[in-house]
Each structure stands twice: as C-alpha cells, then as structure tokens.
Length: 379
Image 1 (cartoon, rainbow, N blue to C red):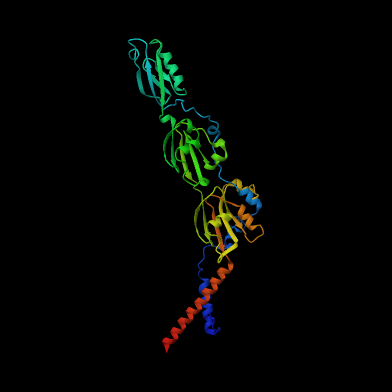
Image 2 (spheres, rainbow, N blue to C red):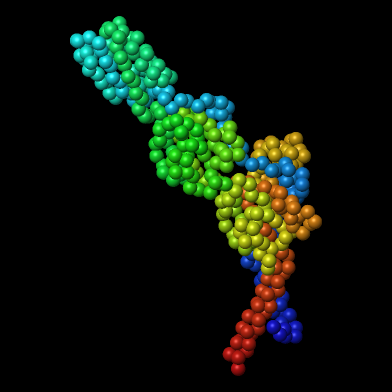
C-alpha cells in the first residue's frame, strides 16, 4: 500500500482517525493479558493471580475421588440359592396317609407362587408363618417338614426358588441390553452382571458405574473394576446399576484455533492436552505468555497454593502459564484441568497493534476518498 505524504489536510485526517479509534474498541476475542492482571487482588480486584510452577501443579493435581464405601466392599457374595424378600417359591408336599391334610397318599400337592413378603416370611397351610429369607430351599424344606410333622406323619416336601424382585438387579445406561436381570451363580459380581447385560458400550476410559443400594449410592470408574479386583463388589437384590459417560467439561476461549465447550475424554486432562483438543494455539494471534486457567478453587487448595491461612471459602484463581519459559511446556503438561475450568488464551500484543495500524490507515483512506468525492462535487 502506497502512503501519501502527510500534507496539512492529511495530518488533520490522521488526528480525526486517531480520535475516532480512541473512542471505540477494536474487535478482539477477549481481554488482554495486562487487563486480566488488573483484576488481581493486589490491584484491588477479586481474583488471585498465580503463576504455575512445579509446586502449584502438585498442589492442584486432584482427580475426582470415586469408589465404593466399606459397606459395599466388605459385603460377601450371596449364594445364588439364598431366599430373599420378594422372591417367589413353589412347593410340593407328599403325604403317607390315605386322607392327608393336603391331599391323598402317593399324590403330590402343589403349592405354587408363594411370595416371600417384605419381612422375609411365607405362609404354608397347616405349617403357619415361616421365615424364608436368609435360608436356602433345602433349609426351608426342613423347616416346613418339621411344622407339618405335627399334622401328618412323615411328610415329604420339595421347595424350589424362582427369580423374583428380591433376587434381581436393574441395569440402565451405556450397556448392550438394558433391563432387569436375576442374580444367578455366574452373575453374583458387578463385572459379571455387566457382561450379562451385553457389556459397556461407551468408551471405557470415561465410563462410570453408579450403584444405588437402598439409601446408599456410590460411583466408580469402570477401569477401576479391572485394575482393583476389590472394587468388583458382590451384588444384592434390588441393586440399581447406572452406566454413564463422565459429565465433566471445560471451556476454551480466546486465541485458540477453536473456541468451544469440551467434555473430558479421559480421567485426567492436562492444560497442554486441553489446548490440543481445540486445535492448539492460533499461530497468527495467540500470546504464548498469556495462557490462563480460570477456576473457582476450594478453600483447602487455595490456602496451599496462596500460602495463606486466612483464606475462607471458595476463591477465584487465575492460573498463568507462560509457554515461553524453559519449563513452560512441562508445567502445562503437568497442570491438570478440572471440571468447569475455563482455558483462555490472550492475543499477542503485536496483533492488536497491527489491527490499530490497519484501522488507522483504512480510516485515512476512507476519509481521503470522501474528501476527493467532495472536491469533485464542488467542481
């Protein structure tokens, strides 16, 4: 672009253009590095600005704590033939007398669809109310036989257990076949039951398994079930199993190749990985000295990072990564992103300068063109 000499008219035009630009803001993706620094507590703001180093990365390297409580981990496996409340039983009784209390000699008297009530009891004619829960079918048979012996000589009793509400679990979410499944001998543990439901259909690295048992609920990473065999807990009738993806996310803004909300693709994501997931820094605009992580930090971590004992409550922290420093990339690789973080990359100072220069000379050309038009109309 050829620049015309600065005549008095063009000097006036330059002053006007500069005044116009000073009264308005040039387009940009967000605040500059210096503007963000002005919001620090030291300068009267409400945000603590912290430069990331090895000590900070260690203090903030906290992953979500998932795992089963002791009452889940220490529960022994229940035998697949153990009767529980909600189960359905069937029974047959043979008697040795011609005219028995339930039937005739040599003929079995079936008693079908016996429901185990919520307290674990069943009712058998002439035997009364008997506790079935916690017993195996063989143990229950002995109990019923002893009760009937007072009514009929040498009764022969057969008890069978059918799958009922008390011996099933429900599985929903990211599995091959959602549904209600009975706890059987091969499916007493969590991993075995997941396999019975067709396996997990979402990426294993971000899959979470939630168990709801009565009033208690706990969550574990799917991979931990295989890394730590102790987490492969024994199931209980009525357990509800939910398999879902990790819902954590972060937002990337500023001078990056892409600006968007990103869900976690692994259990841990570093700052360098977060930047890479949005296409990296914008090579034509990004300031590698101004990579910021905006986070609401819990009190206990804020105290460690800031070396202060007077911190109370959650604090706004602005972590600064300078990728041009000798350890800058290492710090970015070790600094972990957490749920709801904002990764913001500022524009390089020269980019704004170029925009200002381009806008000034663009304005000068526009004013000159308008002046030429006015001069032509006067002729």
